[in-house]
Length: 312
Image (cartoon, rainbow, N blue to C red; front, top):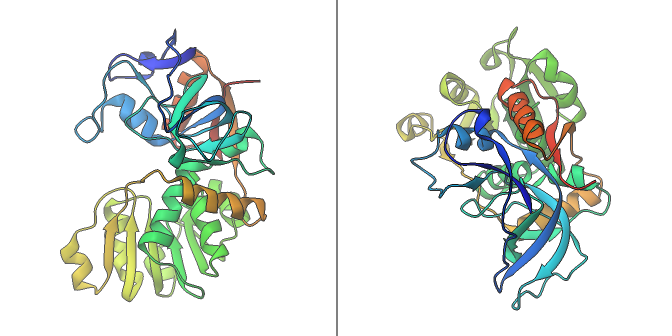
């Protein structure tokens, strides 16, 4: 099969197109003919070697952790899926990724693709959707009527988090730049704060939950707007527990754990029209295409999710 691989850590030039062996599904695996995948910041952070102390890979590595496609083959112990099923997944981090024509994934990490989405739209969902779900639902225990602050709501995770919080009946405030204002408002945020012209610690009333996608000084300043007994959840860096205790706040760091059942719940919300994807530019599964997709992601100026089309 065709895949985009890296043979060592480094810049975008490490992304090369190569013919590799087709993956062999194990007893619990489904072999997926990938129609589309997407680019997330973790892809190029891994490529650059920023996470090499946390994640151990054996080269060559196929990057990518979102996929939507059609089941081609199933392992002997698979019970949930059959060939021809349209599915989407956030596969296991330690296995080969999704910049490839075929993907073998554990059936427990796979869910049926929402019927109202294209493959490209579906490929934009798993990583950001599961991240937002595990932060807001699993960790923060979001409840109806709560006030939620989402930092950088124009990004992939942020825009999904806004929509998810709204489905749970929360009042949502989001920070962002003027370039992201339209996506933030379209996602359903009740208030938008332009971080370039406003200090969010002075612009809003206290909130129950802060979803931190920025870290650093923004994370530290967020304690100023959280009610005692509230929650700060970060996907960037572990909060300092002493600071959280001093503010009577529950704080934690969430690193995504792939989960097919939660992905299926997200799929139901999408089919019900309560959450929609924001797809931006689409690139082909070629050496130049994937390099350009990484360049756009690294620029932090992408609008909507960056998609790689694998199968026409």
